[in-house]
Image (tube, rainbow, N blue to C red):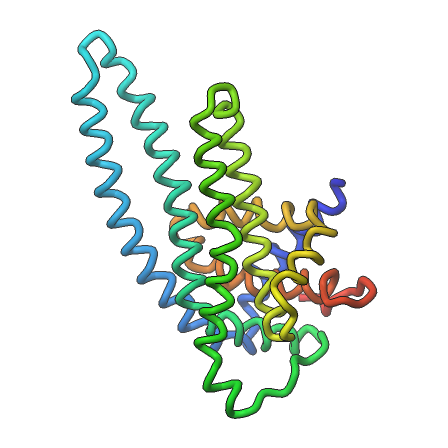
Length: 251
């Protein structure tokens, strides 16, 4: 159990280390610039929502419950952070999918993985539509499940474990997201990528959990997404490529 969790964390840690490799630098400029623009927009929008909700909640409290104001602000802050992580991850992967697919392809070649099918001019023309279609397919997968968790969060007793369920679900979704780029490059159907990941659930959690928290840390989250693409590619080569488990080229 712990070995699998540690392996998943190791792939993400190696992805951060891979950011320093010179062969990836030109593939990182556009994704990091995109992340910066999205982060500023998401933070600006959600900070306004948080301030408005906090003011309304404080105004609604009677004087004898004013001591609860700090708790309400803490809960609203935690919820805002969770929403920011989900929104930032969704937007950056939806808009930046073509860049991340190219980064995953370059990483796989550098790590000694099997090369993707040769591209032709038609593939390049369809790169953006295909990447967006794949991202929408992932959205269709996790959005209904996320809404179900949201409804469960309103059920008494169940809502006590709702934050933990959201955390585990977020880790699983992030593992799917960033292990799917090399899968897509190899034209592996999304349903098959899911099936392969289900055989490595603990490793996926070990990969996705620290990534979830990294996406909530300012500045670090600018680099967390490309690092997750690189780490997810290592995960793919080592365990998901449809071959016997193998070691990837060290950092």
